[in-house]
Image (cartoon, rainbow, N blue to C red; front, side, top):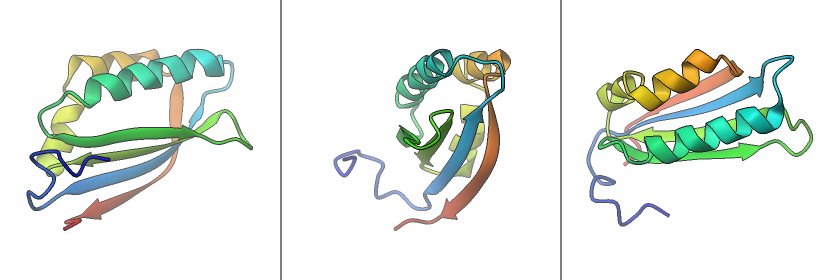
Length: 105
């Protein structure tokens, strides 16, 4: 899917897989739209290699996010981006759990 990305072979790579859920009282469709917008904007960041998400069919208020950056610094920079700050400020979702992966290659 992203094998032709010019940064894909740069070491180290930094990945985050996160399970999140929509906060109680928030419309799942609203949260999903905001997540899609976040994913689209994040994919344009210079250090982003991947940002994909999947909605849990059994629990539609749960999502799994796959994010991959060229390094941990690029991931941290992601949280300084205006689109990320806008998403966080909406307080639509909460983290259930996450996994970090270093040095994919």
